[in-house]
Amino acid sequence: MRRTGDTMALASVNQSCACPCGRSTFAVNGTPALRLFCHCRICQAIYKQPYADVTAFWAGAVSLPDDQLIQFRRYRPPPALRRGICPSCSAPVVGFLRLAPFVQLAFVPSRNFPVPAALPMPSAHIFYHRRIADAQDPLPKISGYWRSELAVTRMVLANALRGAPDA
Image 1: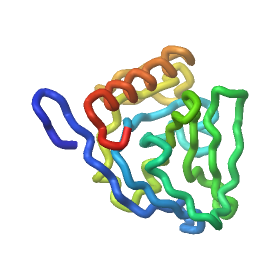
Image 2 (image 1 turned 180 degrees about the horizontal axis):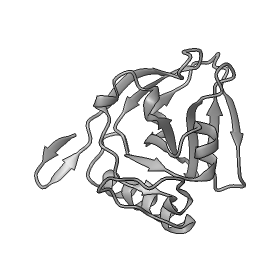
Image 3 (image 1 turned 120 degrees about the vertical axis):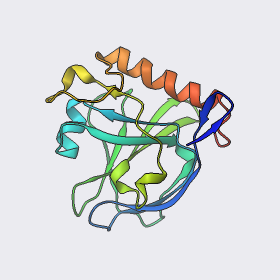
Image 4 (image 1 turned 60 degrees about the vertical axis):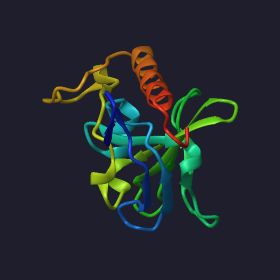
């Protein structure tokens, strides 16, 4: 991140990314909307960890190859992420969430970036009421489904209003 005036501006990311086994690849070229830790039960099951560390971008920043083999699925009724999983290692690759017609976010596991230091610092823990272990950091801990959804929306909009070039 870089400081501009009294706010922090998010730096653009341009990286070729992959799942842990390297079979499912994609590119990210854009400004992150936010980074957060998700404690929902779906993330716990898919990531096989207490929470998921994800970085969100406007969907246009993510380019999937034409021959991608990523298997997409929804794990709950909409509104929900359409989550992409690598068929080889079963690891999360990218998830897409439609906010409105022609408005979509992409959630990329932060571990899929070869240079994670280029990503912003996490902003919050969401779905904290589903945690299986307490987080020992100063980040906001947001509990409840709708409070978590609203918090993500507010963070995305706040960063978009700060002037993200590809928002």
